[in-house]
Length: 357
Image 1 (tube, helix red, strand yellow):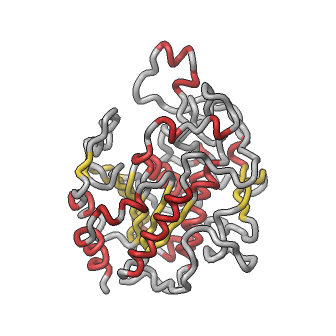
Image 2 (tube, helix red, strand yellow):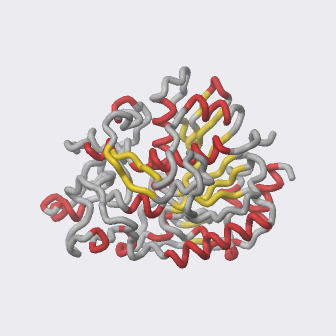
């Protein structure tokens, strides 16, 4: 089946209600890879690995964070000219830097080091598209920084046109793009600048307006964090062993408790998501489910807190109580999203065949 037909069937023929089960997950990234058949039948959720290697067939999602001040960070904040002010924590006053040096170590695997040139060789002539909200933009910014700071020549600054940001790597005729669509379907927060609304309204069946920008992509990466923006789902302070009046403000160490799960990270829902993904795969979509929830939840130290550009001026009350003005949703760069991209890199590089023409 040709790739545009595959995408068209996803966009038009599937009833959206049948896929919401796997869209509504915290920090869920669903990647559509048109890179050949993966018919090993392995579960998309974490399985115990059987061999010591860096293959995504190994369990890259269970492990722990260890300090590595030799090979990390993978780049420096000031080296990335495309760094967004939302994620530039040092630029906006964060003094500690230990959050740069934590490396994710799977239990029985080695996560491969990101190799931008190797990735771009794989993506030559192709289009990668991140679709979603500011969390996916966070990962996209990480990817752009990883590529730029690797020494790839002749990179053009990203071009923003409406909801679409295009980042072109001319030497490889490849693009790494981001499309703002926080709820995937049409909503009243679709404006890429003026989207901070209290009451979100969606058109549950209306996906075509956005999806027409996706049909020529070779790899699509979705996230769904905006579906979970209720306060109790984003701060989890008591889950971190703190009081209800505390959050990520002032935190400089990850959670060390093994197998930590936030109380709102519903494992049952993840099982439903896995079943939905497998159902779509049986209909002919080559789909991968990358559940990075748990590995991210350890990192209470990795958020911007107050160290970011404030697009809306903080109130006097917020200034007098910094915790109330803390961003405990997004991530400082370099940081946790770099690991998400290392995992994404592992999946792309492990594909057994080239991306289809």
